[in-house]
Image (cartoon, rainbow, N blue to C red; front, side, top):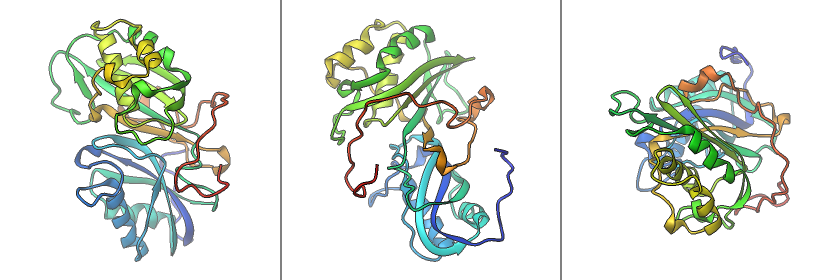
Amino acid sequence: MSLFTRMDENERVSGRIALGLEYRGTAYQGWQRLSHGPSLQASLEAALARIAQSPVEVMCSGRTDSGVHATRQIVHFDTTSARTLKAWVMGTNVHLPRDMSVRWARVMPHDFHARFSSLARRYRYMILNQPVPPALNAEHMTWHRTPLDERRMQEAAQVLVGEHDFSGYRAAGCQSSTPWRHVHFVEVMRVGPIVVIDIQANAFLHHMVRNVAGVLLTIGDGRRDVSLTRDILNGRDRTVSEATAPARGLHFVDVYYDPRFELPAEPLGPAELYFSGEWTGARTLPASSYQRPVYRGEPAGHL
């Protein structure tokens, strides 16, 4: 995909529309619409309503928490208002705050669902590992002042790969009906002063990635042994785990769908990692016997 693919500005489209969205989550209390604070969902719906000239409700591929960022959030909405793809992108962006941006729009078949059609989600946790605090990008990375051994972190993370009960890595208030998840891979790498924790799974529990990052940080700087990740996984007790890593270092970077939906391929973010050359959906999903639970509100028979 060329980043400069021309958007259609002639044909007016309606029905089910998917959007690719990026945002900086610092100023928001998470994705989900709230009555007591700013949310990303409310901001996007207000902008889309201006273009559609009617109320719009969006569904997202995965709800992010307060302060968490996204470089590839996928949403869909249904509308009878016919607009060009260029209007759905450029027009919506005119009405969005500067910390949100629609990257593309596509007309989708009726059986596409941003959340229920997703097969995998991917996050990258960014750690700036240097002795002094940053003046730039402080809201996009977690600063860690003592040296980190990314090789120890990589070794420790591998016990998380596969299908497990992740009770030891879920938030106390997690509302998921099951703690079982299938982690496809965890990779820890260093790019100069930046240590990246790259993790993909079929789905995640509340605070799961930030709890994993908190544990790996204590292993990377030598405070805890490499065996800690396994001990927490086997113990299934969140109360003996390490502190949850800050939200500002977490980026939602990819969501995987069946190729038949033909969503645009994009370089995986954040921008500091564009040079790596990996694009969305480039990896093959691992075989799994995981039985995905039916979510509340999921249409009957939708798998």
